[in-house]
Amino acid sequence: MQQLAVFPQALDDERAYDIARAMRDGFDRHYHLFRETSAAAKQRFEAADWHAQQRAQRERIEFYDRRVEEAAVRLQAEFAAGELPMDVWQQVKLHYIGLLTNHHQPELAETFFNSVTTKILHRSYFNNDFIFVRPAVSTEYIENDEPASLPTYRAYYPTPDTMRETFLRIVTNFQLVRPFDDLPRDIGLVVDAVLAELGDFRPRPNFQVQVLSSLFYRNKGAYVVGKIINGFSETPFALPIVHGEDGLLEIDAALFGEDDLLLLFSFARAYFMVTMEIPSAYVQFLRSLMPKKPRSELYNALGLAKQGKNAYYRDFLFHLKHSSDAFRIAPGIKGMVMLVFDLPSFPYVFKVIKDHFPAQKETTRELIKRKYLLVKQHDRVGRMADTLEYSNVAFPRERFTDELVAELRHDCASLLEEEGDTLVIRHLYIERRMIPLNIYLQEATPEQVEAAVIEYGNAIKDLVRANIFPGDMLWKNFGVTRHGKIVFYDYDEIEYLTDCNFRKVPAPRNEEEEMSGEVWYAVGPRDVFPETFAPFLLGNPAVREVFMAHHADLLDAGFWQGHKERILAGVVHDVFPYDTHRRFQHRRAVPAPLA
Image 1 (tube, helix red, strand yellow):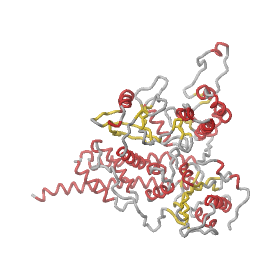
Image 2 (cartoon, one colour):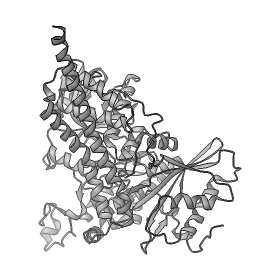
Image 3 (tube, rainbow, N blue to C red):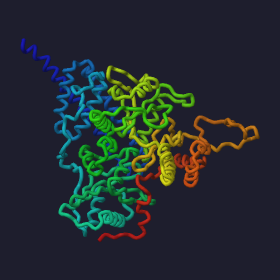
Image 4 (cartoon, rainbow, N blue to C red):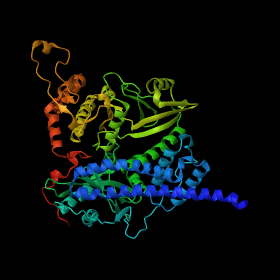
């Protein structure tokens, strides 16, 4: 009798182990494909195949959900996973932890486990017993011991006399096949910039340069990322490598310090392609360069968006536990499509699609979700805020103002569940909080107004170069970051530039048309008349003066149509994540030979 009693338990344990192993295999397949397409970025960069790079960027974002779906289907087909008792799922989790003991991406594998499990189980089981609410496997000091593997970073030990040779070795160690136009000259410019940044320094015994072993590929650039250590001082740096006009490679600039790196890794830019065996080690290194940057945003920047979401949510729960302020309706002009709320002490906003829209908003919830996905997959060129998309998020009701709850019930009832002391929002987006540009302009000095209006026009022009027409260009749809950058964040009317038809307003044919207050000419669904932007944007005389001095071309249909034609012809524009005055272009006249 004892043997008969034990046998089902042993069978359940074996089944739990098989499920855990199938789950791990599903993750390993995902990360193998992720690494494969990231590693291929080097060949695409050297071939200047920018369209393939853009396609790979879009497709890589979809990898994760596909592998989660595959794993869930397999577990249902082979193990009827959705019908298993909960004690088996507890065993599955324990076995899974054991399988990750020597794994190189344990934190990503835990997140994959959560994604598959929550796809199979009802959310009432989403607790610490069945998913990884907190990490179970440490990511500290993971090492890749395979003989042919690269370390996370390389360390170089220059002397003041060997700085050029050291930086030459740093660049050549990446083994780029496409030749440089004049690498000794570029290294000379880099070393001059390094010495200017370090100032009158004395090398300490630990003087070294540490450089991450993979280049960071994005858009049309490849970036060397590292830091210079001297005594107690650490200087972050990045070296952008680009294709020159003749197709040969050039080091385009030298970026230094946390602020330069924060702009390079901004939440308003597309994800990098990086070849990493141990992602947590890359994140740890990058945090030493940018301590203010949350881990969640660094995982996002590395293309690991699901891990970024997981890390963000853990930060959010921690903040809730250690704060007491209330969620409220976000300051600013209320949107017609989104209900936006925030927690004053937390630097993010929460956006929920409303159930009903005004008549002038010819859209649907599904169409809006597609617009947000478009932005996620597109090169955001530093001008479109990244969003984190969540389903079934539980909030404590006591932390919501009554006014906010009333608006949620009125505008978003289909997405709201009230369960005792908990509010569950079935679908929402989360974005970094910025100062709405319309509010910023009301409070700004004349100098700040001028700078902001110029930046606003630059933001639109960057979007144009990236084949994006923002649609609604009102000031309220743009935000100001702490670095003074202008970023677009309202996507419900966004379109590809190449899908729009830019037209001049036809001349009136008679006095009746000239005096008419209504649109008297035919307008197609994708027709845009840029000259009509002025009445909505330029009511403030101070704003109008600056705008017309710097960006009057945005009111000309020819400007927009010209960019559309160039993009349709295959042109991929350069958009640099640093100011143009930082570029070495104007300093290349005299070659700088190696010492």
